[in-house]
Image: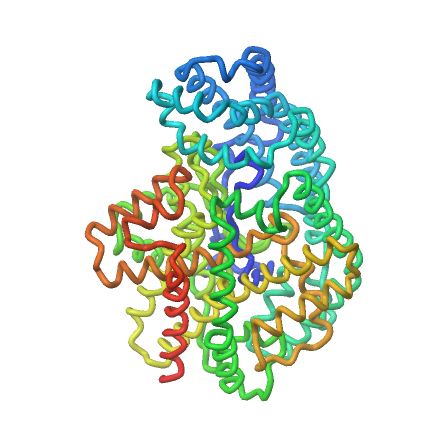
Length: 614
């Protein structure tokens, strides 16, 4: 799949902030907005048409010249073909990055939606001339390809990319079928994705008589006033309940579409294609899921039982999950202070890392402002190596928003460092894409915790971190479990919205534990999770990344690995050229070992131990 089709790494586990005129520093308009001119000046920029016309002509010529020849040409000629292929793909990636970011800026604007769809259709048409290339590459006999690699240093540089491409050979379909599926994408899965996005962007939620966006209503689930949280929860339930059949149709259709594709491509189970794309074995993911599920009692069950006591409640309701703790004086943190805290934390670990981060703040590469129609949550988009990444945040001035800035900035510096690998080789599997983001977040958290001398405030910081880790590990594995059960059952026939809700409630009870008493209206909350629609089975990558970083950060704190900083930066520069075993080996870690995941989960358990002892 071209990189522009799955480029954004985002964070949907945090409640999104309300769209209010917050400026987080005392003056309206002080939160930064991005400037996309480094990609294109606007939708009417003549460079867009020129780039697409040139890419189309080059793609047609590429196909006419090379189709049917790849097995016969020399290794150097094949290397040159790969350079040409990458150049065309990068042009298409630039156009689609611009369209995606523009749509994320304001999904309520019909013009943005039309522009994204038009660009998607044009790019899909152009790239259809390139479909033959990867299919034909995969059909080159192994011995023939090895001979080419041995005789051509230029081609040998592409070995990691070719390695990852060829894992798809057992799942490859005949060329004409692949081309048909490629061209139909814009009227198939992509169209259902757009329907979901536009439905979400145009929804409103009534909370105490006030009409709010979905993001604003979800943000109120973190309000200090329990009555406000309850009202917001009921408003969200009502809004999604009214549209639950539409969301059920979208979910059923996409799940059936995936089942059909999995059958034709011979993937053994629903999550296998995602694992293959992540270059991680099914067994490794199974070990992660098993380890987390077995740890529910010592992690989430234990923590939320404590939280119920802190809140003075016999049972928690779902609107209490993200409730602030008593005496939580989490006031507004001005944007400049957030930037300073994050940059200082990065610099204390690695001055070089902070230098790579600096341009995000010195230039208009971050959109943190709050406005209607803007995508909720946060993400980092790498765009293309000839440009630079962009970060989208919704900055509400809370400590969690500082952590989100640290998280997305980690993606950004990772993407900048990996860009030296080129457009095709810089893309990191999702399981490793969260490494720098979670590591950057941990650096910032530790700096904030170490600087805080007040025991009560330290306890609140620690509790907030535990909640974030539970959202990242426990909640995401519960999401993964929900998807697995849903897709498996969908293979027996269409599921009613009510049945989907029953599966959702089942996994929520298992993961969050007996401290919660779930009201029936919570059964529709599966409908607002975008990953289920956009990137099925993505969610375990958050837990993978968090546990991996817990183990990695533990090695850093122990000081047992010489030249840790240099090895860490080398890991980020590798992009997609190395797999998890190769990347972790310099740190003495191995994700395939049975005790690896326990080591990461023990970090969370240790934090909970500290809270119990406080």
